[in-house]
Image 1 (tube, rainbow, N blue to C red):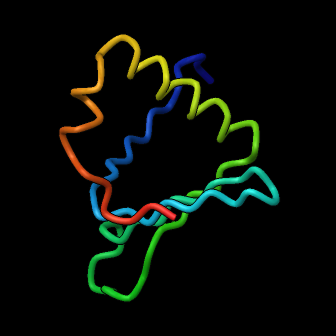
Image 2 (cartoon, helix red, strand yellow; image 1 turned 180 degrees about the vertical axis):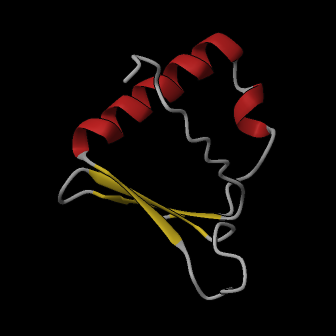
Length: 80
């Protein structure tokens, strides 16, 4: 057994349905491009409150370092 980390790349593309659940602090991200041959299927990523906070902190750092231009390059498809 090696100490090498197995990397499984997942490319996420638009459209996304992003929902923040205020009552739990969790966030879900739904995307539809992963399941070929099943257009009604979707992949759902569920973020714990801690993972949601980590994601928000990272986005704030990106915005601070890159300015608002990286946020205005694309308009979110569906944010709830």
